[in-house]
Length: 265
Ligand code: NAP
Ligand code: GCO
Image 1 (spheres, rainbow, N blue to C red):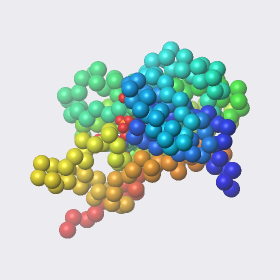
Image 2 (cartoon, rainbow, N blue to C red; image 1 turned 30 degrees about the vertical axis):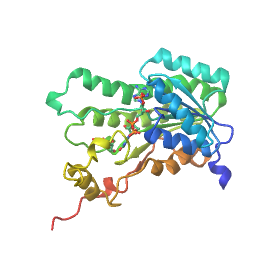
Image 3 (cartoon, rainbow, N blue to C red; image 1 turned 180 degrees about the horizontal axis):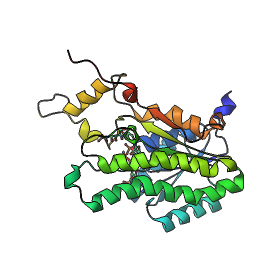
């Protein structure tokens, strides 16, 4: 049974894995046996992340690469193939959010979120799939969101991107299943990372942020998720254990999508 979840000998690319959810998932994939390739835009974070991975005993190689720059992505994938081998597992994790009321959001801001969160995964998937086809197998895991299903004020661009990423996941699964490439998604709920830090900042009087209390009340598990909560799900979708799972979005959200909310007292 443990071989079912073994990633020994596999090459895994996790985009945006210098910290946060990406680093946790990359660490889990590394502990399951994969060699980790990761990228991000800020070179100083890459060097720091390589030290962190090494401390965890993970073999990891970092690249400075923006997922929206197709030629740079292709060059990174070619360099990985020449040095370490074709990529077996791709986790499209890199993503941003801009919390701006819709009427105040510029088209440029909207486009930047779509570029990184939706077009980036398209670019990176297209770059790695030829190598997966050569190998006759591959795993692509797109990091969606509960915002692939639900919206809220100020995150229209993000929800549109993540909703699009859900359908891109399902469509790529249809495109490439016959090549034994499984394309699935993970939809985290509210996870405590730098991206959500502004939503959890203590108030001046030391009381919890109103949004913090709101999320706790809307989540049956009554807590924020931690990046470590994504480790098991990503190893499952990256391993032989999910070879007949295609086009599925696995929500890791403490039950928030299942919950109508507590009746007001
Ligand atoms: P985070 O803490 O903001 O980390 C984002 C990572 O992506 C960083 O490594 C960042 O590094 C990198 N990145 C951003 N834009 C990039 C680009 N254009 N090219 C390459 N790398 C890029 O985010 P997170 O909370 O860990 O979230 C990771 C993923 O999970 C995102 O897709 C997010 O939408 C999704 N998600 C998060 C939550 C949550 O509650 N935190 C819930 C659901 C889904 P650089 O800035 O140096 O490039
Ligand atoms: C927000 C949060 C969410 C989380 C996540 C929830 O502002 O509502 O940032 O969008 O990032 O996507 O699953």
